Structures are given as C-alpha cells and as structure tokens.
Image 1 (tube, each protein chain N blue to C red):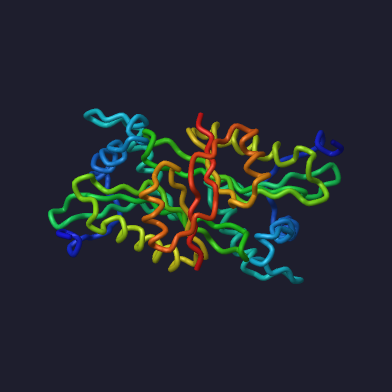
Image 2: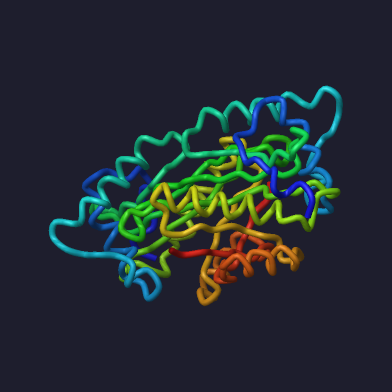
Length: 156
Length: 156
C-alpha cells in the first residue's frame, strides 16, 4: 500500500497532459484510439484548454509523493431539469498507471469525485464502463454504485 | 403518423418548463422524483437558467403543429482528452408525451442530437437508459447505438 498516504488529488495542468494520454493509451480499449508522438498532437492541448475553460468540468490527477501523475479522472457537473432540477455528476476517463494499481488510488479519486459532486448539489453520480471491464464494475459496486442502466454508444 | 411532418425541434424556452416537467413526471421511474405543483418549485427554473447559460448544453423540445411541446431531450457536448481530444455527446432526459408516441418524434429528436454532436466534432454519442427500459434500448439499437457499456449510478 506504499504511496497511498501521500497521494494528492489536484486539477490537471498543461504539463500533465502527456502523462494522462499515456495512461489513456495504455489500455486495450483506449489504446487504438490515441496517437502518441513527440510532441503530442495539438488536438490534445486544444481539448485541454476547452476543459480548463469549462467551470462544470474538472480534470484531476492523483499525484504521488514524487510529484508524478499516477491517476486521472474527469468529473462533469451537469445541470438538468429532472429530479427537481438537481445536477448530475458524470465520471469519465478514470485511469491508474499500471505500475501503481491495487494501492487504492482509483478508490481515492472516485471518492473525491463523489464528494465533490455531492458538495455541488448533485443527487446522482453516473458513469459508463465498457461491458468487458468486469473488474471495474466490481470496483464501482464496492463503492456503492448500482448496475442500474445500459450504457449505449454510437461511434462515428 | 399525423403531426410528424410539421415537427419543429427548437431550444426550450422558460415557458416550456412546465410541459417538460410534466413529461419527465409522467413516467414510472421519473414520476416519484418530481414535484408537480402550481407554481412549479423554483429549483426547476434555477436549473433551467443554468442550462441556458451553458454553451455546451442544449435542452430542446419537439413542437407540434399547434405549438405544443410534445417531446424533449437534453444534449451535452463534453470536451475530453481521450480519442485524441475529441468531444463526446451525452443525450439525457429523452421523453415524448404519452398521447404522441409511435409517431417518430423520439427518432427525429435523437437524430437531431446525433447530427448536432457530429457537427460539433464529437466522435461518439453516449447515453444511459435504465435496464428496465427494454423498448428504449431496442429503439436506440435501431438508430445505430450499441449496448456497449454498463451504466452505473450512485444516488444520494
């Protein structure tokens, strides 16, 4: 369980983009969708600027004791009319660096996101996880999430 | 199929909020979560103002030939780093007034949302539908959506 105690969850900075893309790419589902080159394609930085400008979106990293980004997560707070006008929290792009798994980093990040959503008036937090990610589904169930919905996607 | 030809999909206005809440409430899952009274609780209008101010969110209604809102849908365009910084479209709160179902109104609204998301650079459109909404899942599959994910929720 080394490293967990000194974990800091903070807003991602421009210099974290490379580490975040590396985590997104180091994944059987996400890998083929990314383009890792040096320098990274400009599209990543354009998206990062859009995220930073949006007051309803927080892209955070988990920083270990050495200052390295070893986890990431994006939380969107979405206003909506349903449930008497309560906002919803949407968690996306949760990743933990391969060499840092099973240390509770994902749990700390998700618990942070749940607390943040709750603090901002959300009555529900939701996420989609690919049907093949059985371990992830067990992980979220352990944190209190229910397998209540079917997540449907249309890719272009 | 009466009424479909003259359907207009347009941004929701403040005076549509009552009709939208009535559609959200007229549902076995959503009903217990809403509070219908005259006037409607202020929380609905506060949420409506948040939606209107957010350039990434479009709450639309389907207006029939008589000017009545007979369907609603919310589309969020969410920036993100994954998929080379492509945005995602999230469809929420899709409803069609009970007396207007099976006329293709839902299909026109979802097709509008897919085209809008595509036009704004999204590479994927996603949604969560409750696992009991089997008809909805068939409807989305007919429009090209895949049952690719598990939708998980945590309610407070």
